[in-house]
Length: 430
Image 1 (cartoon, one colour):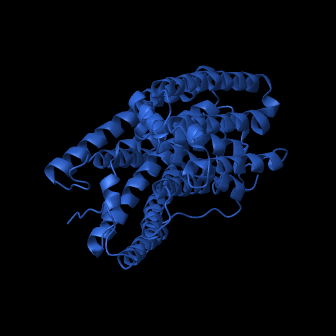
Image 2 (tube, helix red, strand yellow; image 1 turned 60 degrees about the vertical axis):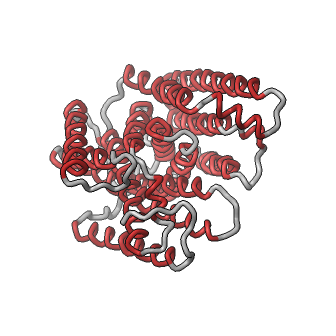
Image 3 (cartoon, rainbow, N blue to C red; image 1 turned 90 degrees about the horizontal axis):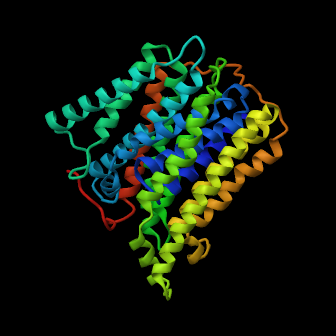
């Protein structure tokens, strides 16, 4: 599969996952999206050594992208809906920071998994200890000593994420995991740009009379651009042969992805009161029965896909010749379909009906595009991600990239403040 296709598939799947994540929220909702992105890149790349470690690498993608889920950003979106240049530009810039932190840790963890070899393995205990320490130090110093609040009066845990990301960056640099650091950087760039630009789309769309879930479009844009950045960093570098897979580690990771993540999202996002309100809005005769059925559907979906994941991985181990061409794609499509159906049940979409006025309806064609791309490329051999002329990362190059991002933020700010007289639910930071 070509590098462009790998990038497109990863971008679409992470965009889909992040859009669905809007129905669940926080760390555990983000972890499912991260798992989807990791598996999508693994199946599209067709690297046999990575495929043998697919569950563990998926676990790392899930945990990495989940870390930023603690950050609050609702009020930051409101800053972008005003008319004063400094407040609006601040809002877009902070969204880029928040998105960048999502991507940096997500891409960094996944990239570190890819770069692990027999000769160079990360010390995860040391790394996690340093990240926790960095999170506490940055959070305490920035928020309680300097009192640099980004989102008052909301949670300021972005500072903790910043500290964790700084510790991760220093660990990767000093231990020579430069490929993983590069994946972290481009994932951060993509997700940061995607969050700011996605909210720009939402702001401009708010001027129109088109009634649509533009917030969900913003979420998709964050995921799409973040996935694009992560995949770009992977396909434009040569990678060493991966460390040998751990059978126990793979099975534990598979259970975590197919059982622990869904179960936690189930308990945190399925609420009887919410289902009853939906049923009453749809004029159902027995709202309590509707709520009970949604819980039942949720349990059935979890059981079916847990069995599916176990069966597919067992068969993958017995038929390694079809690992990259069949079983890893099946795992990838399974975890994505799983989240999509879970989201549909959570939002009672099977009762509302599917139409283009619901953003959830577009999840289906977005999901099908990678499936079709895989079907027509399934017999092609892996390109081994060969790179003829690798891009040389320099401080000058990154300075130009970040300067370009800053210029884009200024541009979308000017367009925003000259397009309306202030939108509803806007906030002023200063």
